[in-house]
Length: 133
Image 1 (cartoon, rainbow, N blue to C red):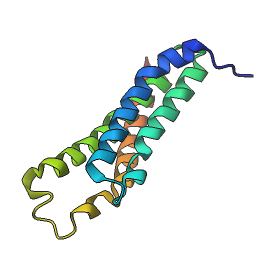
Image 2 (image 1 turned 180 degrees about the vertical axis):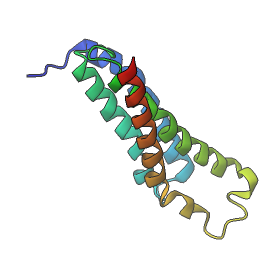
Image 3 (image 1 turned 120 degrees about the vertical axis):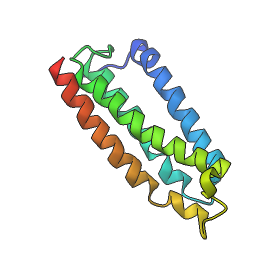
């Protein structure tokens, strides 16, 4: 039986805060009328992967090896990074991303699939690197 302790929560707290800040930014940029609920999916997956990593390591990031922590980090960088970058570009009209588009909010329709795919590639790379350490 797996028991969640305060050590798990303390170590998970930075990941939760980062994911909540990124999700709040997504909702701030898109509003509730676009696809904000879908675009929060990469943040939730990062939190889920961090929980799995901590549970497998008994409350320590590298308790069961480096594969899970590096894979989680490898997922988080491209998934959250791509999502936040495109939302930033939309908010600041980077290279006409908003003003030159016919339907500017349609950018966010398929963004969760792209970010999850990019995160999956990062996860695989992190997993392979973690196996070699």
